[in-house]
Amino acid sequence: MKKILSIIIFSFVFCNMGNAAIYGKGELKMSDRAVNDFIDWVRTKQIYKGNRCKPSMFIMSSNGIWTQGNICCYTQCQDTYSKKIVEECERETGVACGVFSIRRTIYWTNDVNTKKDKLRVKSKWSDQRIKEELKRRKFID
Image (cartoon, rainbow, N blue to C red; front, side):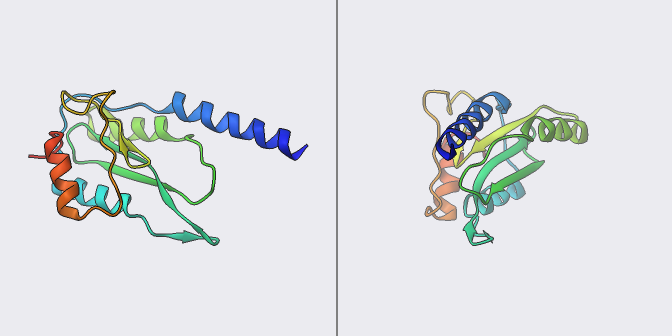
């Protein structure tokens, strides 16, 4: 019975992850604060009830100013709020918003960071290396 329940929950989690996210697209120039927020989010080191929290989803406005980084402190997580957060971002900023990154992989598409060639950021990279990669992908000047 536990196996069946685990399979159902596992299937539900991964079905929701792909369908709910609203990925950002187009030109994006991140502010210095947004870059620093992203680096801090990539290196999340919080502990909750004995579990190490990991980066889950980073949402950003297309003007590169508004950000929100969500973390997950459980072994399995599902995306239930990205659509609401994107809508909140758009209400507050008046510009398009979208998911910038999920679990350290940047999904925001532009002419350099395409669906076939996504940037995967490593938490062990230095701040300088992360900034260089973001610059190479035209997310910062």
